[in-house]
Image (cartoon, rainbow, N blue to C red; front, side, top):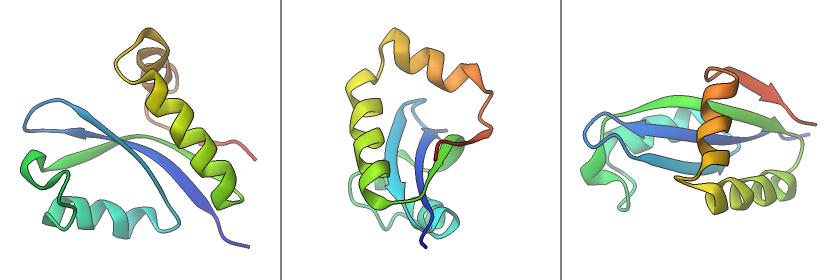
Length: 91
């Protein structure tokens, strides 16, 4: 079984957030910070501020889409402050 992560990164450069999902969180964060992702290259470095763990890619993608729909709203702010960035197991 593959573990999937939904994560929120915060840019040190502009203070904005990036929401994504991956099966290898540490490698994905390294790629963001190396500038391998075109959409985030100019906003690095990033810090991981929130993550959730899922048992399937499908579950993670549904959750990622939901969190993105909240971006910059009150629900998003509650999410990233509620658990102080700790990992949450949602499966």
